[in-house]
Image 1 (cartoon, protein in one colour):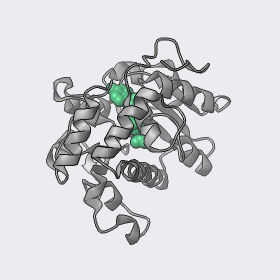
Image 2: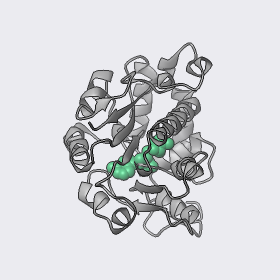
Image 3: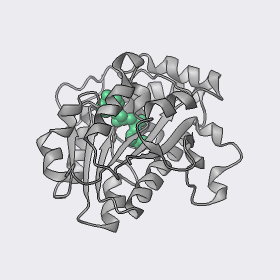
Image 4: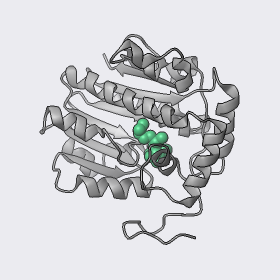
Length: 269
Ligand SMILES: C[S@@+](CC[C@H](N)C(=O)[O-])C[C@H]1O[C@@H](n2cnc3c(N)ncnc32)[C@H](O)[C@@H]1O
């Protein structure tokens, strides 16, 4: 067992890999442990382009946030925000408007501890340790209430998150509960892993994540669309993340399906 770093919260299980820390490993971060790297290396064998998958997903997150900023949104609720890495939501948002508000939410203690440390001294951004499924715990938390005004539009980000929610937890209804609390003009930025075009590699990933704290549920394009069907989809609807409002045609590449992640932005009308 490796030594516990000082910043690590008590109670973190170092014997089980977590999705947050594996994702940090794919992105070249330093907040992962031997168990995460072991799983991450096996995932790399099953799917050698997993780093590009993560980078494409991050690029989608940035474009979705900018899209909302361009439409005047100044309040962001980033659920399943992960371990901070390059291009965090508060950096993008506060570069445009330092007064803009960002609330991060994650249920993984390492993601929460590291987010808390980088947000120290930032009065307009915070992290709440809570579970997506605990809608009241997220929305009624004192920190959320302090920073976000739900009578005004908010952009909610659920990026690379809901594939960690099994059908038994009723994700469609959970998303509906968030929708109900949002003011008209609010947005949802959303991405989700699929196995539609690379069933073998992706099934390998699903099998490996069975032993992590975050087993994966794959969904088809139609199933993803159904999950977010309360929202009106912004053009071009549900597409592979690299196809969603690319900065340049080259960014899409010849095989957008290799990103294995669907992305979309929806609006509450
Ligand atoms: C793959 S990372 C994505 C990070 C970031 N959203 C991005 O796209 O770059 C997924 C994150 O969701 C978090 N997560 C998974 N299930 C969750 C849940 N039920 N509630 C809150 N966070 C959750 C994990 O801890 C992890 O940090």
